[in-house]
Image (cartoon, rainbow, N blue to C red):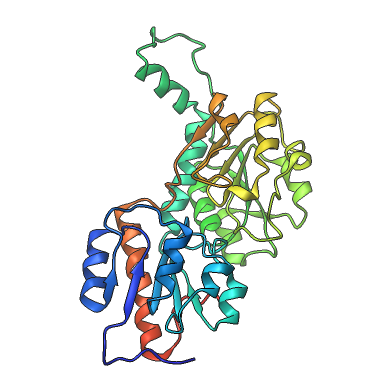
Length: 328
């Protein structure tokens, strides 16, 4: 792979506004093109960018498809993703053009696990419904049967995807004395199982009927596309609550909406959507769903850490044509 000259500052384009301290550091290190207005770039604008820069810093909402990769100028050698998931980047096309792709794992684990637990609690205790009643000034006072939810303490949590975030969620759930069941490509290490009491289910269909809460924490891949479909939703208990902080496409949203409408399951808490920022309008009519705007890693601490992880990948690349977090 041809190396970028160290005699000049590399040209770096950033597709979205990043935390201030990250942009300041990038401006010191690189000839950087920032998106001060934070306006999403359309495809033609992305094509123009990749034709003129050495490094592209993109976010999870930027679709870097084969057309954009094919339009890349000879100087583009690295796509540094601000985020963990890379299903919005055509990795095969990048590989064909010898363009490295990096991401930002590890640093967002704890905050995403916090948000998964937030969704569990909000949905179980019907907090979204209650907040809406108060904001409409429609609360008439306490009654014995008002907005009765379900207890979280000592219930069974099922986790699909026992990676970093799934494990962090399991540790939090243990504080509520929850039983942990999990499905993964393979069992996690024995230390994690001992710490959390987690029980491995190789067969997803066998795990689903056993859980009171189901948290989706697996990456979006061809194998996990719509892994939660109508038939698997039907295996859940009628009092089960589903939460998704991973990727929207892992769940068949039409099937989920039907399950919520018919009370086949009790509720859902969602931070991600298939085709976001577009959200299936069927969700808007439902009171038994909590809807958040992709807040999983949205703390100042984590977003700054993600930005500096991007910089670490760029610096490593400039040093020796490799990256800290290599996707391909």
